[in-house]
Image (tube, rainbow over all chains, first blue to last red):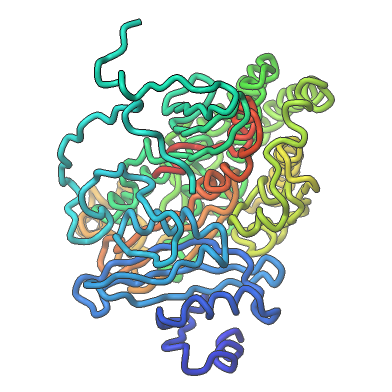
Length: 166
Length: 404
């Protein structure tokens, strides 16, 4: 039911729509993604006021290599959808949706940390679970699970001022 | 105290009235029950800026899940929210079962639901007890930790372990409820009731406790939704969103229970919502025990569930079946699924991607307290240092789940 509504509203912006296991998945293009998400949040037919999750999946053999996956939920209408954006491995960026949902702040930081996907327009895109000098992005498939990291020098708390929230 | 030479030119005497002091609180602070760091900028005791640093307990949960079979993920899920491991087990099992397109037995659904609710009470007792302890209510804290032990006894009687239960499997659970489980529940609940009533008297109308909690850590309904808060944090802000009601799983749609909400979105409401939820969980357990059907707790599909040990040791078919399932894992059809359960802290989601082999291609956990921590600096800026402890306690950050 949401498939028809979304197709009627967005037309060619939706590159692919699927319904599997009672879950609807839409693929969109990154260039128009921000407006698409805004419309999903604001238009009463969709009312996706709750960003459940932002993550990515790495498919090294595929083109585009990464899928950035958004899980959306509407608390008022009790429906969910999944939105995907295909992202090229050479220039992995998508627009940030921090302006649409506050939850995107930390979720996008984690996705950047784990996959190296750049969320353009994110006000404070830095690592969150890993430390700043960590090398590589651990959830990429080409990062070996048993890889060792170099020992990092101790950070002097007086010489280096502490981090601020933005 | 002699200062190191490299600090000399960094320390500039300044007018104390407009000085902003930098303070790093944590990562191992005695008043914060979790490994977390607050990078504070303080004007006196008032918080001007607070940068929350997480990740100290990161063990690569999602990466490690990709290395083994689907079944080998269960021990990892125990270690997400270790205050209520049964719920994590159930969530992961439900997600894999939906990917496989299989359904478990009726009794299994009831058993999973009962154990989820027992875990929820234990989790809330941990959260409230520790929070009370940290704001000075040590007596109530110790009472609640003792009550939690009654529930851990129940969990131990069913699963064989108190905390790291590894009790669910794809297609069922390892152990059914023991024969005397109803009596055990009755005995535990009788003692739990006493503790809850004592703690209610000690905390709910306690002047000191209310002063520390009421009006502190406030978030408006709008902000709470935008920041993706769920569970008691969202319900305290007045949104009656509960995965068990909005997207029912197991047999929650047959149970009669209420979703407690608050209206101010502060720490005191969060405390109350958690407290009331324990009574609702008791209601669910009592109804479920009255309605639970007899029967097996595991399905018998040989492609999913290990055969009986009798068959493994006495027939070549059983041995091969066992070998294939252990070495290759369950062959889950290619596809993806998002399954959410209502964990004690909120919406715990598993987003799984399978490429059709016996190993997960991607396991993603949507950790509820990670989102709560993301909103923490909004709750704290402009407040005082002691409010950090109360607010942090009410978010109930569990390091294993937040940092994975």
